[in-house]
Image (tube, rainbow, N blue to C red; front, side):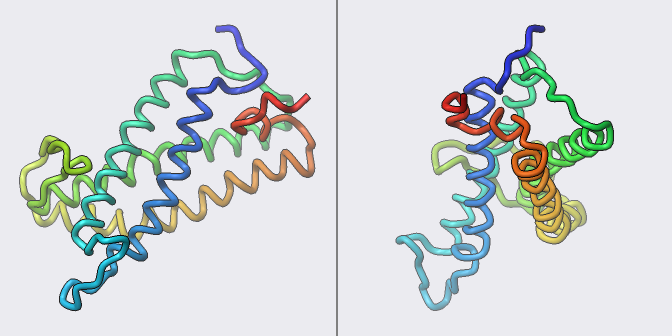
Length: 189
């Protein structure tokens, strides 16, 4: 496959859309889903359970976008490799694998937690996402642990490494790694 000097528009869009959606998920989890139902607390006109619905819908959206990104990555042209030390290349690839495990596992654990716990998942009140797992409280509990204890920490660590790596390439190595994924990278000369 022929390579280019930067990622294509769809790859860039999905990268930043997923990043923004993950950030939105954390904000919703820490604010809207913490509202007091008995006190009738609302945020932007939504109560706690409305925010759960939004959170689940965004999780489904993330899962679909990541699946599309994985398919697109293996069927489209990739940027030309930038020369770098082997340790940097291996660390980059390891971080890439961990990012994909998180981007698939985090929403999947939320889905399993919901459906195994006997709660359906609707996508923005438009349609029901199929329940592919029977009700199973033990499985729901395991998924809950992964979703609320393991994956949040993993996101901070792995995304922190990802951002640190991008900044390292931009500030220290002064190569084009960061420019390959920036939305306006075509402006760089």
